[in-house]
Amino acid sequence: MLFRSDGATGGYSWIGLTNRQLDGWNEDWGMNNSSSFVVGVLTVTENIAIATADNVWLDNFKIGATINNNIAFYGFSGTTRNAAKWGASDLNEGAGLFTQNEKLLYYTQGNVSGDNSAIRVWRSQALPYNQDWAVQVDVNLPNLTMTTDSLVGTGLIIQNQEDLDDTAVVLLGHQREGGTVSHLFGGFMDVNGTDLPDVTISTTSTSATVRLRWDASQKKLYYEYDADGAYGSYVWNTLTSKVLNAGSSNWGMNDNSSFIVSLGAKTENISITQADNVWLDNFKMTPSIIESYGSTALLGTSQSYYLGSTSTPLISNGQQVSPTTFAGKTVVSAEKEGLEYQVLWKTSTGQYMIWHVDLDGVHQTTDAVLTAAQVKTYEPIFGQDLDGDGLFSYANERECRASQISLAPVPPD
Image 1 (cartoon, rainbow, N blue to C red):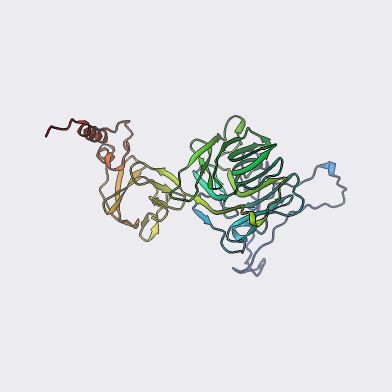
Image 2 (image 1 turned 60 degrees about the vertical axis):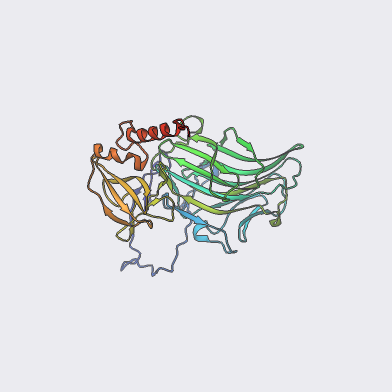
């Protein structure tokens, strides 16, 4: 049992009050792996009258999801809700509702004047403030016939877990203001309940993918979209970005803070049926890009490194290798060379070593330890300045020679 005497101020730092062994001899609850808990909130008084003006209250009830940037994927196939991942119910306003039928369909039921919305919260994890992450979802929004002063929007929501009035939204939208109908990608932010200026861009796309991406080193949230979605490969366009530690967009977070992610749809003054085909699908938590020099991107989460894509995790001794597998050692680069990957490790003492890894990501052999001076000769393979001297001379020399050859005059016949 934990408590925090100053609540959410400055981030949560929990203090242990007590604990109980629920299978102990004198406090055995008789539970097993099929059992579950019900959680509620409680206020108790004895021999005292309490008025609402006395300001005794509870707020911001949370089920604490594990904080990580691990890979996740959820496609809304079938019709059965996954309560373990999405909770037992949605957050609904007005006439807005979600239903699952091969997609997460949005529709309205009842009076649609004013604001209507449905929000489905991802319960499996919260996203860390001190690590990179990216979350995306496919969205579909046809060119519907719009009533006067109406709108439809569907996309992603990120909130500060310690202050839910800090909110970011990226969406695909369709609206009519007066006689003007527009289709757009939109980026929105509230800070302590105050709206910042909206950012929108016109589009003809009716099926797209939207993404929110966090750069922990920059403390910056990127709003991104791919106008043709999963067709071909993803090509991300930045709609806008916001720093969350300064200025009007400061969310007051720290390294112990985390984000909640949700899927949402919103309408105003328009009825939506399931046949209108407003939906979300293929929700993904993707790994961060550690480096993308050369032809092979090195990806990572707190659980694993990946070579090129998530289909090739880095494996050693039958286990996926993560940033914490080997103390004092970090993977800094990876590149495919012929029928293998070469994976470059850097130690906390400034030395390097190269793993030789097969195309399935399995470690085979390790080269001798290299100094910073020695690793410089490998810069052309890994496509970057490895020793941090600001020079990339060997590769530049090779590129220069190639350029000179290509620009040389063709000898006469």
